[in-house]
Image 1 (cartoon, one colour):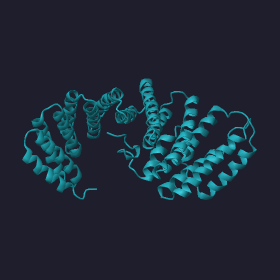
Image 2 (tube, rainbow, N blue to C red; image 1 turned 135 degrees about the vertical axis):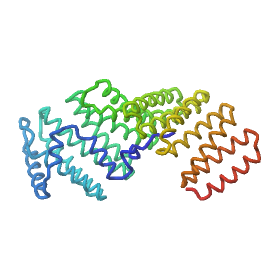
Image 3 (spheres, rainbow, N blue to C red; image 1 turned 45 degrees about the horizontal axis):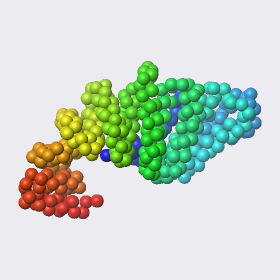
Image 4 (cartoon, helix red, strand yellow; image 1 turned 120 degrees about the vertical axis):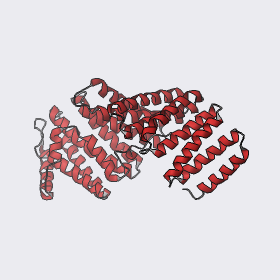
Length: 392
């Protein structure tokens, strides 16, 4: 059980363009800014708009309104940067994003007073999007420190937007999504305390969104994000042997995933997520010494996966092996053998899973030995070692 990499989610494959797209989708909460961002502007017009906006920013006074060509220029730079990132030219992408942020900073530096609220919102929105693009690029380059710095800048912008329009659902959702990436990065750099704080903030934002029950709140997406935060919290607490906190987070994750399944009418993908949450809870219960409570939890996971086994045979095999381990911990080796054999049959049918099959066979050997079948255990252990030879 480990915190899940946000860029490895089903809706966010671990590629640079997918990570950038994820942040682009969550960054902008302003309809007018999005309209500017999506304008079909030629390269020469972009250059002229950038030059004009820079001149206007340098000449701005505290009483002036937002220059009309500033945001189109900024958004043009941001989206050209995004296009460069998707094309794999990260150096040019980062340069364009830095230009966009400098353009916004140069305008802000000329003002002795805060801009009108509407202008402040649009400025923060554009800046947040640029920062999130930048963070996504650093994230895919495995530059943890630079990614965290960019995420911190984006968080400041999003919190500015939240102050200007409290309880805005899309801003809160963007914050909750951002905090999941921040939590993962803190966990990856060995700072579990910071990771826990980030995930708790993200989970709190999700709960606030659900409690507000605004008409335009994407409730299913928010609940899925809440479940992910809870899963990561449970994994971090489990790694630190903080079992009560791990059990609390894992239990709430199961409840949330169950609600998602109910809303989505048992769609296979959400059933698989629910089973994963049940397995995580079962792991926490067994590891904390409460295998008796883990067994019924894992039985539910196996039962929920059964109708969708064609969509998730590997997950079903993992659930069966987890159930076998819990049964063995409860002193029931015969039942453990039954579930382990079922898992191994599935893995053999799948093919291409030599490492998983070898691990399952080694566990089966343990259960055989515990049941008094020493010769069979040795035979299976030898087969497992041959099966696993050469596995990465």
